[in-house]
Length: 567
Ligand code: ATP
Ligand code: MG
Image (tube, rainbow, N blue to C red; front, side, top):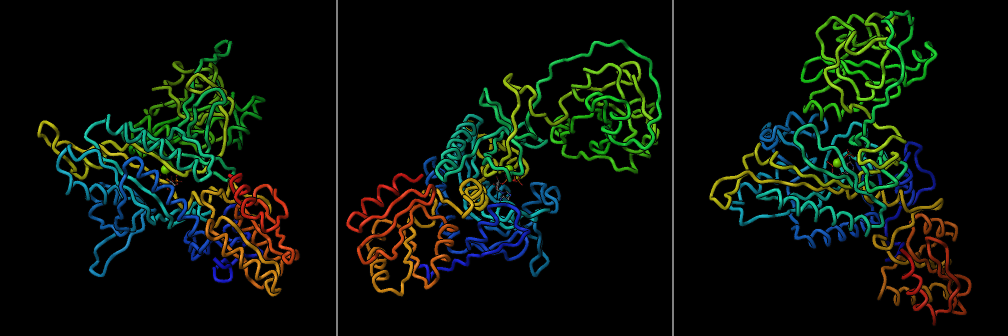
């Protein structure tokens, strides 16, 4: 393709609001253009990369017998009411009305549509297993669209759904998907790692996320250097090993702690370390208040709370509710109370004997509070985030942290949607049975960004060969000079037989051309310049700059060799 004919609006300066490196490079290299917050046009170069990623995805899906379909993005509210998600999904769901006032959503995901599709068509277990996939734009009214394509409000997803008569069949497809995802991310050049993830409060389902390691990642991965263990921090369980302090029981005492409302200030005031004091929080679980006691240096993990109580309906009580309940404000709360309110505590509270807690009176705390004597703990469990360095649940450890971008997720849904939406088939006994389902997503546009996060340098993008928009960048330094233009055009004609070539035929200054070429980042560059008359051109790899001047007689062999070496 001649560059003069392609639309690649590279930029010198990008808006400061573009924080993520991939976002800046996507704008700078002229790959995307923002339409409005979280909504982008993909320009020609990005479109080519997306096509390459999608081709790899399609190949790997077909390899495991998943078949491609395309479902509507516009979904009638009735379907979402059947599954219960019209109300449960919340403000992320883009809702709209047609001219008759009938309600619709722009699909953020397709469990409802696909379940209604198969329930009408699948009659017998003999038609199973079945896996359907599509590649399509999804819509989510994200609270904070950001980082360019990493968190958009309209984005491209590959979503797949599988249907089964029994767990064994679901397990098989889940494992095949897991392997296919591993291959896909490897093939597109991503260093991505599968991690154990949270499957939500309802159902003991099973799920993995695929995390592309990157500093910009919004997720924290907890992993072990000594085992295969890797989990999203939301899910990373903590192995509790008792570590009681050797101390004598002391008498409960109320002390004045004026203006002290944080655990750190409390610890400083008492000349203790943060882990020796506690925090008490009030949560509303399915509408009922509970107290949660954790140590000063820990943070509550609400995903673990939801899993423990088996509900999504958990929220921190408001200041007013707390005051109403305990007669004090957050910062002075504690478990010692005559109100009948259940107290739950993190496992590590068991290590404390004489405990520092709020006195439920603003400006006062208790020291030496004791479980059993001064308050009762309903249950101890793992209610907090793991800290770096702690032992891991698989017995390996210590926990190490890394940041990651969730590029994909595989999920065993079980019969959640099929039960709600009455999707059954006849089993081998001739009885109607709910389908079992799996769902599997890849953020295609997010993957594009993640690849850039992992493959770039100061000057621009360095595309892995497998997804590069073109293989070779052929640059005529000064196409106004006949010998340069003629040689470049001859080479262009020859090289395009074996490669996708972007030929920079523009009448721009050399500096502009080189800058743009660095930004666009094609694997191999061939420069036709002042030695064109002698038939000599310069060939260079984008990734490590290796290459040399070559006579055109030897060019094809040399380019083949160099291209072969690139990753
Ligand atoms: P996140 O936790 O990042 O919001 P999610 O878990 O809600 O994502 P899924 O429902 O699992 O997302 O969607 C499948 C895939 O789609 C994700 O793994 C991710 O790669 C991609 N994705 C989700 N939300 C967005 C978004 N707003 N912009 C771009 N890609 C997204
Ligand atoms: Mg996900």
